[in-house]
Image 1 (cartoon, helix red, strand yellow):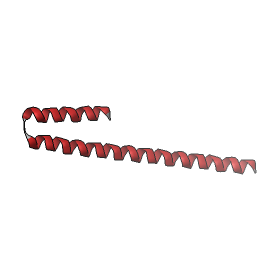
Image 2 (cartoon, one colour):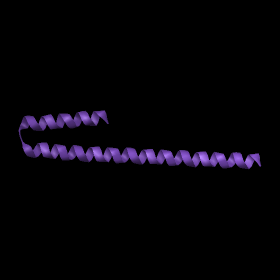
Image 3 (cartoon, helix red, strand yellow):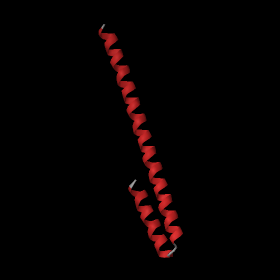
Image 4 (cartoon, helix red, strand yellow):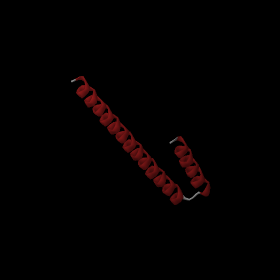
Length: 69
């Protein structure tokens, strides 16, 4: 995530040095899309991990309960 931010900053600076507004806007738009996608992917990964953990815990819990009986 930090590397992406650094790359975005480099893109911004590069756009400024060219002195072309469109390139700066394009870089900003691309950066925004990349950040949104990255956040969405991270959110999905977190949700999947949580679901897997919950399923495993519940499964283990059921096994323990059945063993106790």
